[in-house]
Image (cartoon, rainbow, N blue to C red; front, top):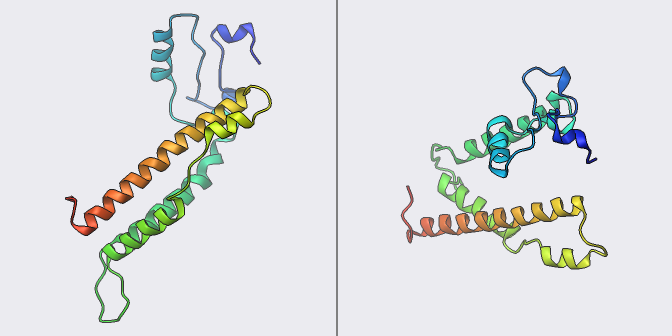
Length: 162
């Protein structure tokens, strides 16, 4: 997949010619800093076109993400307290959700070193990307756990919450 044309100004999005305003041209050979500047200035957010997909490919993903967000907001919204037993307050819902997430992901961690050791040959490009994603997910899981523990301290009154 490496070829001399990549060093020229070539369209890097495979099927972008049919779409207006979606393009990422490879820069001419230059210094590292100018490559970084080119990427920062010219590469927009992730678009399905960058992966050779139809522009509508992310609609379902965004719809599900929005539905999940709004269900969570509705669950955490202040509700009238009824005289019924068992009606949960927003704080109780947040505590339960935090504890459920911690129970589910509390001990999860991707063992990157074990994966690298188990590879028979050196890691190829796909394995490198997978390893990098595992490292990113480990950082994300650590941050989620830290944030939930802080939230629990806030519920207990040991940490100021705003």
